[in-house]
Length: 290
Image (tube, rainbow, N blue to C red; front, side, top):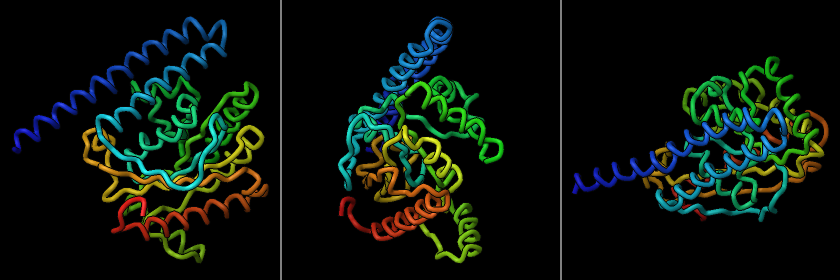
């Protein structure tokens, strides 16, 4: 029986390679060609082409998670409108979080319009990094003074060209890890705040700048909490069927609900992550969707 399980795991990995990574490399080739043939003559056509390419690949990932990985995604909370420009925030437990969020974007008809804050070094990575470069994702150095002007210029571009967006943010700045949690404990002690156990302290400056910079272009903030039954899965765990169920709890907040002052916005997101911490704590040991 062990050899049979190993064979099926290998078969799934092979299917994953041909359905996910080979198409992405082909899309990269088309994106390079679009830069040569579309960009000099029509930047709008160039953007629309690359949004379509991103939507095809991300849509394929979403399909593969459900149909190859066999994952049940349980969604609770608010009903979300379609075709709305938003800032989406989520807790970040592992690489598997990313394709899980594709479900929400696909149902909202915004899967090709996702824009991600990603580490600057990833832009040099073939396939995923190169692909994100063509769709106005924000490559940041995690240093606010160095990133500020680039972020503001990109937001201005979204406004000036009325570019549809789902801005995807993991405000913790990195995946949840024990060493990072120790650093969070130092921050909460310094600020005289209760300790956090299941999330990291969010980075408030980037979130506040996103809200202020996109107010009037984005209609709402979607606050998503991802809950797994066990340990957070890797990207490959999802596609290899090692995760059976994931829960997404989603709440929609119109921009005006966050306040207009920087401190109000920063206090709001800290409060949201304390609520996430409570939700994750209460979910431990309970069936998803409880």
